[in-house]
Length: 401
Image (cartoon, rainbow, N blue to C red; front, side, top):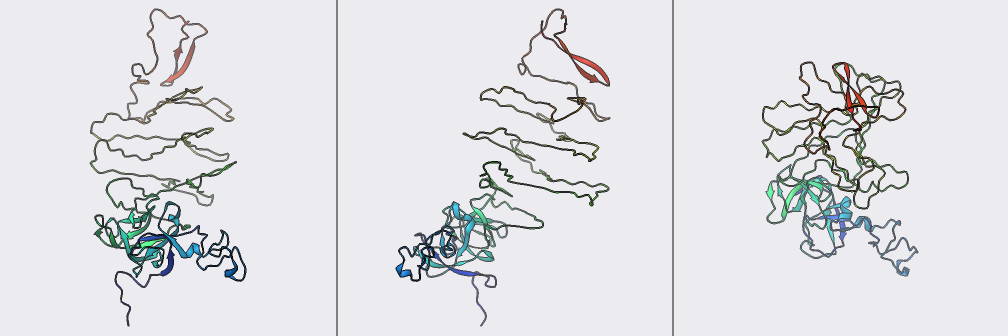
């Protein structure tokens, strides 16, 4: 007789019998997580206490950490912040549904099968990402962060946002180490409001090193080796970022290519806090041009705009003044043998018109004072060389004496 299926695909289903330890109402389709840190066992024999007969043990229901307690893979509980990486599966239909735990229940294991799950989401087939969250006995919409942690994709279009109910979903596990040759991600926004993360890394548990530690939350490395010579119109990038907007958004909408923020929080002590961009030409290498940072701003839009520029530096110093303060600092370092020719160079392409002003300073943005009468220079005054169209001229630094 052929298998009859209702709401599940039995060819890929894997069921497991587990002990639900919590005292909550049991629902069909609710997520559960393994009690990965369990010390309570299931067999009633303490491996850590040992002995031939459990009846002689003083704590036979407790197996200490490190003694292969079967409770770690037979006991399950409601999702919580600490156990989301130990997603065990989805409660299957059974006589225990609607009753209060603790009870033995059957679960569908998260192996890519399509099963009924309990959710409060407005689901679209193949588009709504569902996740498990702290204290939730249902699957909620996941926007790519850690809570709800994404584990499922809806396989039906049905609105459960008014009343929590079932929807078919493809479920997968969490806490898996991933090794691969390449990868492609195409995240889909499940809701139109709020935050959405296409690819999110939480490095909090990494940043725990002490003496001489170095932690890199995201590391990208690569070598073009000597036997792979690029020719023609070629280019490589360690990190390539391209973004495009074609939507007529509100004028207060911000579209950023890179949005990087680093903070030293209350109580934090650092030797230096910085965003560093570095380029290095090692000995024996050859390069026609080398820029640590190149900024290219292009304006082809005929529409009016308030500002357009290449580099905007904003300084906000509300704390104790530093010994040395500046808006922009140029310096040489290392074992340089000769002086760098130019500190600030202003140039243009052949068909451009360059700049009108070298400086444009707003009133009171710099402390300045009017001069009057004749000025006599002496050896305490200085002349600063500038080159205009190939000819050297001098800016005067007057000591005021």
